Image 1 (cartoon, rainbow, N blue to C red):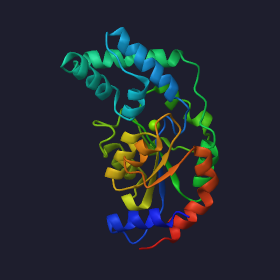
Image 2: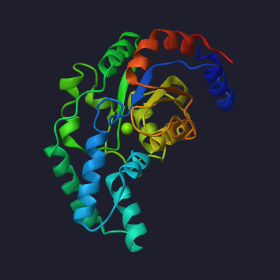
Image 3: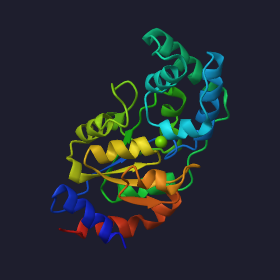
Image 4: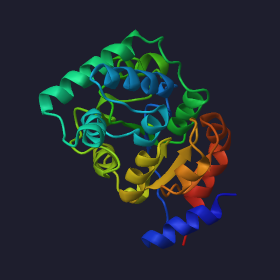
Length: 246
Ligand code: MG
């Protein structure tokens, strides 16, 4: 079922096989249904500082660090970047607005998938550019016993952020595995680009409003319409990943 996508990945990277030990999960839009809140508060926060962003742009830029998003908008609207202090101020304001939103629920199927992944002997690793303490603090409540704090990459670890491969390369390092020993699960085009640039088999889940083509054009090796459908396919996918050879 997934053979041709796996073969293409192995050929492109000249790997004999994937020896799966770690699954690198993005957070927003993969584990928490938080993107609608992010889209709304990015618009409100930037407007407060006289800048504009559309909801679609928020989805297209998802995965960038807060500072990178603010600078991209500032460049477009003012022709210059903002100072580090201003970026930190705007991001803090945005985070404050986010915290006032209703708590986003876990994405349907996410916990079920995480439990299956763990049962397969694969280590789940969190890889997010987010510094949103309200969500990071809820990980253990929403997904009890899944994430080891030593196996998390967050905004405080990353310098460049997605689409740079840095966050996923750090995730590999934290898990103590190589690119062909992991998979990435992502919902955003820039996150997919980062996973692909890190040389990792990258699975897209389209949990948002963007067309599938936005995720496939970013280089996703496989695409699922939801976390539930990926969870439903996990047993088959895991078996095929482990048995597929070049
Ligand atoms: Mg995401």
